[in-house]
Image (tube, rainbow, N blue to C red; front, top):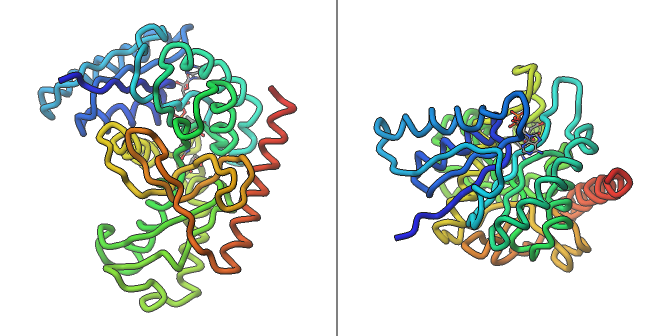
Length: 314
Ligand SMILES: NC(=O)c1ccc[n+]([C@@H]2O[C@H](COP(=O)([O-])OP(=O)(O)OC[C@H]3O[C@@H](n4cnc5c(N)ncnc54)[C@H](O)[C@@H]3O)[C@@H](O)[C@H]2O)c1
Ligand SMILES: O=C(O)C[C@H](O)C(=O)O
């Protein structure tokens, strides 16, 4: 049987760690690509190192590193983590000019080498970068998706589990909106072992957890000092890769292109989707409360502003 082919563009912290999770989960063969230059051999070094762990963990994936898009040809999934991460004192939006240019260069190559791939964008500012990937690849919107909601929801679930002293496995939750400080955790969709969160936690404690989840990326940047989070982001991305490769039909939050859905009007924003081999197979439209609708609109407006700013930069 043909193994799936997964290419990861950007072999830095998120890209290489995503390759690690994908290999450990035996999702397919992996190509790690990064730019030529002084560090041209780096993706080859990381790929070889990862491959040498295969006898220990028992996976048979072929893993290569390269600077050449020809090696990524015919990928089933392309993950894009190319770009700069933020440092303390920066917002994700400060990365817009640099990463929009990088995203354009990468997507021109991806469109030529893997025209049938599902593209999963990770680079920040996420919602604008996915829009850029859609513009440049010209792929149908269901095959260009952004990773943010799985990570944001995982942070929210982690903090809830820590507060309640229960297993993360029993916490079911959902966040919507852009990947920024305006993301919208839905208390109405948060439950623990089937019990609505409102029966287990006071509103004050829940608000504090929501605030920490919103600022979860900045908290890690402040601790690391040299860059941003990568273990959880890479794990979240690998979960999306798995949903596509294995046609899992996962119902998870992703940055998906919403036109009529939620009245967004042609932008990427975090919404619950069904993710399978075709990419986004369905956007699930929920009934939101008035306050959730207002928070979602604020988040969408922030994404629109960023996309408008990007148009003047590329
Ligand atoms: N969406 C999310 O949830 C999320 C989470 C974490 C990080 N991020 C973003 O992901 C991006 C990568 O983060 P990181 O920590 O891996 O950074 P990193 O600096 O460790 O790695 C980025 C890599 O991209 C490479 N690169 C730059 N230009 C390239 C090009 N034109 N072609 C191919 N590769 C290129 C760099 O050489 C580098 O190896 C950042 O923009 C960061 O903000 C997003
Ligand atoms: O915070 C960042 O800049 C990286 C990423 O978006 C995150 O949420 O960890």
